[in-house]
Image (cartoon, rainbow, N blue to C red; front, side, top):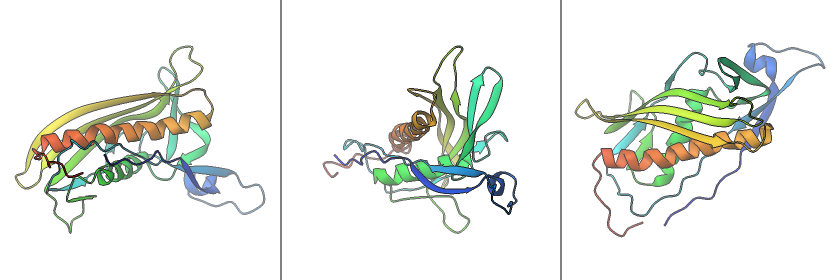
Amino acid sequence: MSTRPQLPIRTLLVVLAALLLAGCVHIGRDRPELTIYAPQVAITVDPTWPRSPLTLAIAEPQSSTALDSPRIAVRPGPGRLQVYAGVAWSDRAPALVQAALVDAFDQSGRFAAVTRPTGELATDLRLDLELRQFEAVYAEGAKAPRVILVLQATLVDTRRGRVLATRPLRIEEAAGSSELASVIPRFEAALSAAGQALVPWVLEAAGAEPSGTSG
């Protein structure tokens, strides 16, 4: 069995909040700081997963305007969508999800190549995604949130121009407290769980053949 250990959240850098959020830089001593997080994913490769000779492109998910942002979304109550102050993702949420899944599929080692769609490189398969939820959600009266990731996945055979399969995916990860130190790793866990679920699904939908005893 090939496994990868769980990797920790990495705080990449601290930048000016105004630079990321307002598109400008304030000169002077009173400069607000923004902590940037880049989630790392890790999946456990099942040796029974087949291998595919096909190449796969994973598209950036479509999303609502509210989710198409680097800010970390939190829903403190029904109908209320806010963002955590002082922190952000290293990229817009759709691009972050795309990068995480490209990494997860690449970790699997089950495809000839895993890429992002480009106009220069044709692939056999394309995974289209819609990002419907990627936020921390507080239930009524709850003291800690659950991180919810909701995706709609569509696998396309680009050689024949047809849809092979579609799948809704909902993942929930409970945080131990309301502190960001507890909440942020649950986003990372949700992304890892999405990769863990989607890799074998894509292999099955693409009709990959078992690879025998090779690992």
